Length: 121
Image (cartoon, rainbow, N blue to C red; front, side):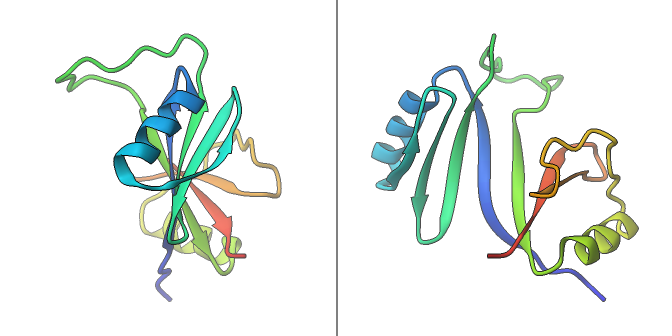
């Protein structure tokens, strides 16, 4: 069985989520659907971009081939456990730290970039 996921959201680290979201809402013509100090979100046609506050955030240098994590993908699936099993078999790993509890599962792709499996609503 092959898992086919739908892209639900891209989350970006930010020093000012509300301003960051306002800029991209203007640039893309998307709607601001959530805006607080710690987190903001813009949405269009069922896809969202989230902006999460990271204390001490520093923007990446350009170019920076040695830079660290700057984003993660949220993927919606019908069955998180089935998708996890399939994607681990395809090369992902499941880190011990799982901040979402029952709400989502964090996996690391084959190169170590984190992404989340979320139940489809």
